[in-house]
Length: 167
Image 1: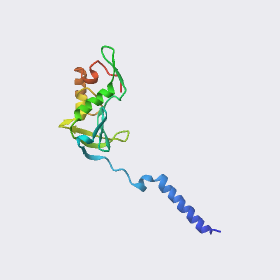
Image 2: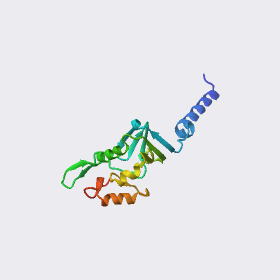
Image 3: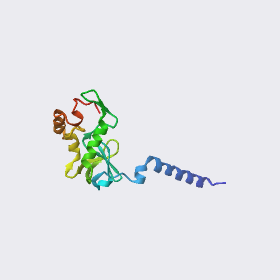
Image 4: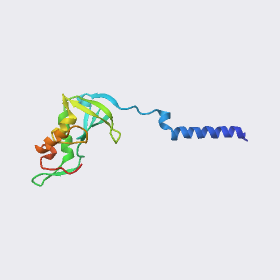
C-alpha cells in the first residue's frame, strides 16, 4: 500500500508538470526573439514563391508593404482574354532576382508569421520595383503610393487593361 504522503507528492508533481507544459509553454521553452537583421542568399538559393514572397535558403520572406495577386487570380484583357495575374506578378519578381543574390533587411513578421522585410537584388529595391512596375499594390503606410499611382496611370503591369479586381 502507498503511503498518503507519497501519493500526495506524486499528484503534486504531476499537477506541476501539467501546468508547466500546457499553461506556460513559452516560459518553459523560451520566447521567440524579435525578427531583425539581414538575410542574404546566393542566386542559386533564391526562389520566388509568388509576386510578394521569396524563399532565401530556408527562410520565407514577404516583401514588406507590398500586396501582389495570388496565383490563379484571373484578369481580363482589353480584348476579353483571360490571364493569371498572380503568375504574371511572380514572373515579374523572378525576372528582377534571376541570376542575382538577394539581401533582405528584416523588420519582424507579418500577420501569417512569415518574416517580412525590404529586399534588394543587383542594387534594385524589390519592394519598390514590383509596385513601380505595376505588378503589386502598395499597402497602407508603405510610402509607395506615388509609384503605384504612376504605374496605374501609365497602365503598367497589372493595370495595363484598367482597374484590377481586389486582392
